Length: 223
Image (tube, rainbow, N blue to C red):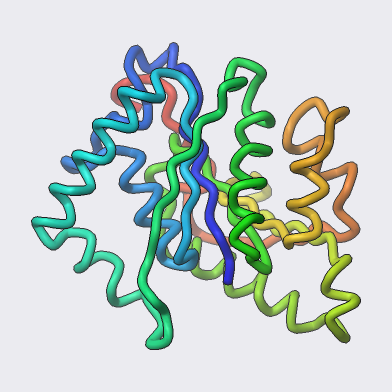
Protein backbone atom coordinates (compact mmCIF):
# COMPACT_ATOMS: atom_id res chain seq x y z
CA UNK A 1 0.00 0.00 0.00
CA UNK A 2 1.16 3.52 -0.80
CA UNK A 3 -0.07 6.24 1.55
CA UNK A 4 -0.68 9.86 0.66
CA UNK A 5 0.25 13.03 2.55
CA UNK A 6 -1.52 16.28 1.66
CA UNK A 7 0.16 19.40 3.04
CA UNK A 8 -2.46 21.98 4.05
CA UNK A 9 -0.89 23.70 7.06
CA UNK A 10 0.36 27.02 5.67
CA UNK A 11 -0.98 30.45 6.53
CA UNK A 12 -1.93 31.30 2.91
CA UNK A 13 -0.96 34.93 3.45
CA UNK A 14 -0.73 35.75 -0.25
CA UNK A 15 -4.06 34.06 -0.98
CA UNK A 16 -5.83 36.15 1.65
CA UNK A 17 -7.83 33.18 2.96
CA UNK A 18 -7.23 29.55 3.89
CA UNK A 19 -5.81 28.02 0.73
CA UNK A 20 -7.17 24.60 1.65
CA UNK A 21 -10.71 25.98 1.48
CA UNK A 22 -10.40 27.92 -1.78
CA UNK A 23 -12.77 26.41 -4.33
CA UNK A 24 -12.18 25.23 -7.85
CA UNK A 25 -15.21 24.01 -9.78
CA UNK A 26 -17.23 24.17 -6.57
CA UNK A 27 -14.88 21.93 -4.58
CA UNK A 28 -12.14 22.99 -2.15
CA UNK A 29 -8.48 22.59 -2.98
CA UNK A 30 -8.24 20.21 -0.04
CA UNK A 31 -10.99 17.96 -1.39
CA UNK A 32 -9.39 18.01 -4.84
CA UNK A 33 -6.04 17.02 -3.32
CA UNK A 34 -7.51 14.15 -1.31
CA UNK A 35 -9.46 12.92 -4.32
CA UNK A 36 -6.35 13.03 -6.51
CA UNK A 37 -4.27 11.10 -3.99
CA UNK A 38 -7.03 8.54 -3.59
CA UNK A 39 -6.35 7.54 -7.20
CA UNK A 40 -3.34 5.62 -5.87
CA UNK A 41 -3.41 5.94 -2.07
CA UNK A 42 -6.28 4.33 -0.16
CA UNK A 43 -5.18 6.19 2.98
CA UNK A 44 -4.46 9.94 2.88
CA UNK A 45 -3.08 11.98 5.77
CA UNK A 46 -4.00 15.68 5.64
CA UNK A 47 -1.72 17.95 7.67
CA UNK A 48 -3.43 21.05 9.08
CA UNK A 49 -1.79 24.01 10.78
CA UNK A 50 -2.97 27.62 10.48
CA UNK A 51 -6.65 27.92 11.49
CA UNK A 52 -6.72 24.16 11.93
CA UNK A 53 -9.98 24.01 13.88
CA UNK A 54 -11.88 26.09 11.30
CA UNK A 55 -10.42 24.19 8.35
CA UNK A 56 -11.23 20.87 10.01
CA UNK A 57 -14.87 21.85 10.62
CA UNK A 58 -15.41 23.08 7.09
CA UNK A 59 -13.66 20.12 5.48
CA UNK A 60 -15.66 17.60 7.50
CA UNK A 61 -18.88 19.39 6.54
CA UNK A 62 -17.85 19.50 2.88
CA UNK A 63 -17.05 15.80 2.78
CA UNK A 64 -20.42 14.97 4.29
CA UNK A 65 -22.06 16.91 1.45
CA UNK A 66 -19.83 15.30 -1.19
CA UNK A 67 -20.62 11.83 0.14
CA UNK A 68 -24.35 12.53 0.23
CA UNK A 69 -24.28 13.83 -3.33
CA UNK A 70 -22.40 10.80 -4.61
CA UNK A 71 -19.53 12.94 -5.96
CA UNK A 72 -16.82 11.09 -4.06
CA UNK A 73 -18.17 7.69 -5.02
CA UNK A 74 -18.29 8.60 -8.70
CA UNK A 75 -14.78 10.05 -8.65
CA UNK A 76 -13.03 7.42 -6.56
CA UNK A 77 -14.79 4.09 -7.15
CA UNK A 78 -13.45 3.51 -10.71
CA UNK A 79 -9.86 3.82 -9.46
CA UNK A 80 -10.04 1.23 -6.71
CA UNK A 81 -8.73 -2.32 -6.99
CA UNK A 82 -11.25 -5.10 -6.53
CA UNK A 83 -9.52 -6.17 -3.31
CA UNK A 84 -9.42 -2.66 -1.83
CA UNK A 85 -11.37 -2.00 1.34
CA UNK A 86 -12.21 1.56 0.33
CA UNK A 87 -10.51 4.84 1.10
CA UNK A 88 -9.90 6.88 4.23
CA UNK A 89 -8.71 10.33 5.26
CA UNK A 90 -6.84 11.22 8.44
CA UNK A 91 -6.71 14.86 9.60
CA UNK A 92 -3.67 15.63 11.77
CA UNK A 93 -2.49 18.93 13.24
CA UNK A 94 1.01 20.35 13.08
CA UNK A 95 1.34 22.71 16.07
CA UNK A 96 4.72 23.86 14.70
CA UNK A 97 3.46 24.81 11.24
CA UNK A 98 5.15 28.21 11.51
CA UNK A 99 8.51 26.42 11.33
CA UNK A 100 7.96 25.81 7.62
CA UNK A 101 6.82 23.12 5.23
CA UNK A 102 9.39 20.54 6.31
CA UNK A 103 7.85 20.42 9.78
CA UNK A 104 4.46 19.61 8.22
CA UNK A 105 6.02 17.02 5.94
CA UNK A 106 7.55 15.33 8.95
CA UNK A 107 4.26 15.30 10.86
CA UNK A 108 2.51 13.85 7.81
CA UNK A 109 5.18 11.23 7.18
CA UNK A 110 5.10 10.02 10.76
CA UNK A 111 1.32 9.63 10.60
CA UNK A 112 1.52 7.90 7.22
CA UNK A 113 4.29 5.53 8.33
CA UNK A 114 2.09 4.37 11.20
CA UNK A 115 -0.14 2.83 8.50
CA UNK A 116 2.78 0.56 7.43
CA UNK A 117 2.95 1.61 3.76
CA UNK A 118 5.60 0.57 1.27
CA UNK A 119 5.85 4.18 0.09
CA UNK A 120 4.41 7.66 0.51
CA UNK A 121 3.29 10.34 -1.96
CA UNK A 122 3.59 13.95 -0.76
CA UNK A 123 1.42 16.63 -2.40
CA UNK A 124 0.97 20.31 -1.41
CA UNK A 125 -2.64 21.50 -1.27
CA UNK A 126 -1.85 24.40 -3.63
CA UNK A 127 -1.45 22.01 -6.58
CA UNK A 128 -5.16 21.40 -7.34
CA UNK A 129 -4.56 20.91 -11.07
CA UNK A 130 -2.34 17.83 -10.88
CA UNK A 131 -3.92 15.19 -13.09
CA UNK A 132 -5.10 12.06 -11.30
CA UNK A 133 -3.41 9.90 -13.93
CA UNK A 134 -0.09 11.54 -13.09
CA UNK A 135 -0.45 10.51 -9.48
CA UNK A 136 -1.36 6.99 -10.56
CA UNK A 137 1.71 6.84 -12.83
CA UNK A 138 4.06 8.04 -10.09
CA UNK A 139 2.65 5.46 -7.69
CA UNK A 140 2.90 2.68 -10.29
CA UNK A 141 6.55 3.45 -10.98
CA UNK A 142 7.26 3.56 -7.25
CA UNK A 143 5.76 0.08 -6.90
CA UNK A 144 7.86 -1.19 -9.80
CA UNK A 145 11.01 0.11 -8.14
CA UNK A 146 10.11 -1.80 -4.99
CA UNK A 147 9.58 -4.98 -6.98
CA UNK A 148 13.07 -4.63 -8.43
CA UNK A 149 14.59 -5.15 -4.99
CA UNK A 150 16.10 -8.58 -4.59
CA UNK A 151 14.50 -9.39 -1.23
CA UNK A 152 12.81 -7.95 1.84
CA UNK A 153 16.13 -7.06 3.43
CA UNK A 154 17.09 -4.88 0.46
CA UNK A 155 13.62 -3.36 0.33
CA UNK A 156 13.88 -2.44 4.02
CA UNK A 157 16.81 -0.12 3.33
CA UNK A 158 15.89 1.05 -0.19
CA UNK A 159 15.97 4.86 0.19
CA UNK A 160 14.51 5.93 -3.14
CA UNK A 161 12.77 9.15 -4.19
CA UNK A 162 10.82 9.68 -7.41
CA UNK A 163 10.04 13.16 -8.76
CA UNK A 164 7.75 14.00 -11.70
CA UNK A 165 9.04 16.70 -14.02
CA UNK A 166 7.94 18.56 -17.11
CA UNK A 167 10.39 20.19 -19.52
CA UNK A 168 13.12 19.85 -16.94
CA UNK A 169 11.09 21.42 -14.10
CA UNK A 170 10.56 19.29 -11.02
CA UNK A 171 7.10 19.09 -9.49
CA UNK A 172 4.74 17.16 -7.22
CA UNK A 173 3.76 14.69 -5.95
CA UNK A 174 7.07 13.56 -4.52
CA UNK A 175 7.23 9.81 -3.94
CA UNK A 176 9.35 8.30 -1.16
CA UNK A 177 9.96 4.70 -0.21
CA UNK A 178 9.17 3.92 3.42
CA UNK A 179 12.85 3.80 4.50
CA UNK A 180 13.48 7.22 2.95
CA UNK A 181 10.25 8.65 4.39
CA UNK A 182 11.34 7.44 7.82
CA UNK A 183 14.76 9.09 7.49
CA UNK A 184 13.23 12.38 6.32
CA UNK A 185 10.70 12.32 9.16
CA UNK A 186 13.54 12.10 11.71
CA UNK A 187 15.93 14.63 10.18
CA UNK A 188 16.60 17.57 12.50
CA UNK A 189 19.34 19.24 10.47
CA UNK A 190 17.83 19.63 6.98
CA UNK A 191 16.84 23.13 5.93
CA UNK A 192 13.88 22.05 3.78
CA UNK A 193 12.33 18.99 2.13
CA UNK A 194 14.68 19.01 -0.86
CA UNK A 195 17.67 19.13 1.47
CA UNK A 196 16.31 16.25 3.55
CA UNK A 197 15.79 14.11 0.44
CA UNK A 198 19.31 14.88 -0.82
CA UNK A 199 20.77 13.96 2.57
CA UNK A 200 19.12 10.55 2.78
CA UNK A 201 18.17 9.25 -0.69
CA UNK A 202 20.41 6.58 -2.15
CA UNK A 203 18.72 6.94 -5.54
CA UNK A 204 16.76 9.86 -7.03
CA UNK A 205 14.60 9.07 -10.06
CA UNK A 206 12.56 11.26 -12.40
CA UNK A 207 9.36 10.63 -14.33
CA UNK A 208 8.86 12.94 -17.31
CA UNK A 209 5.19 13.80 -17.72
CA UNK A 210 3.02 16.09 -19.84
CA UNK A 211 1.10 17.49 -16.90
CA UNK A 212 1.66 21.22 -16.20
CA UNK A 213 -0.30 20.79 -12.97
CA UNK A 214 2.74 19.30 -11.26
CA UNK A 215 4.44 22.73 -11.24
CA UNK A 216 1.36 24.96 -10.96
CA UNK A 217 1.23 26.07 -7.35
CA UNK A 218 -1.55 28.59 -6.73
CA UNK A 219 -0.58 31.34 -4.27
CA UNK A 220 -2.88 34.23 -5.22
CA UNK A 221 -6.57 34.53 -6.15
CA UNK A 222 -7.15 34.08 -9.86
CA UNK A 223 -3.86 32.34 -10.65
